[in-house]
Length: 242
Ligand code: MN
Image (cartoon, rainbow, N blue to C red; front, side):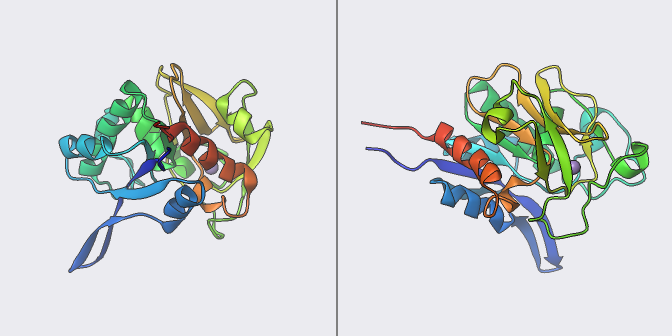
């Protein structure tokens, strides 16, 4: 008998007004998980200890998009264009990223998630692409998040290439930060034409470990290649019991 894998999706922070603030996840994440046979649950951030206890309930984890990462965590002062940060979320997600890698829990890191993954493993970030990367292309697209706006080139001998089956793919782009110095434990497997890191993989993979700077969850319903990322991820999370 098999059971559906439980996929934890880390929550972002949204303040609606003085009376309403808290965890938020774009519904495209839950939909992409459910369509591909997983049970999505949203993980609130409280502290690293509780983060690891909630992760224990999960067969796989998605580090989702959201706020800028606190630059103190990679030993930098804040750039003028740094956006709002949520240090409690940063610390909870860094703990979960490390735990997932150490315990062979499948990990899909999306947008901010790939940045957290890099910081968790000792890398740094570009705090604001438009002001820090000369001649960069537009990474904060002005059209609907489901639409692709730029190309990325994919390394041929990568898990990502196995999924996408192409050396180039069109992606959406909703970020103003990006990976700076790449962790020695990660390998760059996709880049945009301006050299921005668009995907990384763990150099010691024992299970599915992929981070992408774009938002496949918002393309998956209309794009089979992007949906395939969730299919492969959730397949790797499946535990078959007899
Ligand atoms: Mn981009």
